[in-house]
Length: 83
Image 1 (cartoon, rainbow, N blue to C red):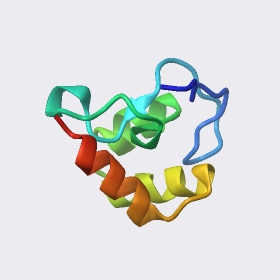
Image 2: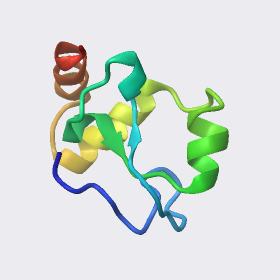
Image 3: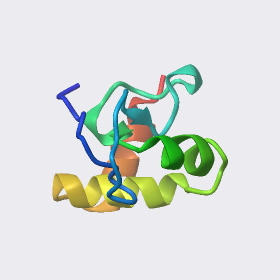
Image 4: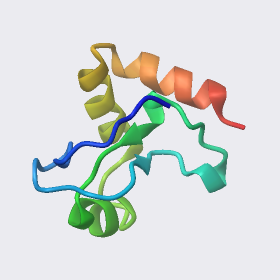
């Protein structure tokens, strides 16, 4: 996967560090693909994403905007690659 690591959160714009969050977790068969990764700050990662407050659809929309494609393409690609 190309490097997605940024110094800012793609949700709130706050300072981010650490690994990229997989929208569909690796443990759930999520692919290691640019369309399945998003950089989050600690708060958005732990409390929002893992807390169930950020939907996959919402995160895929942010990824689609970043990549310059439609959300549907991102979702279809990621779900199609799911192991």
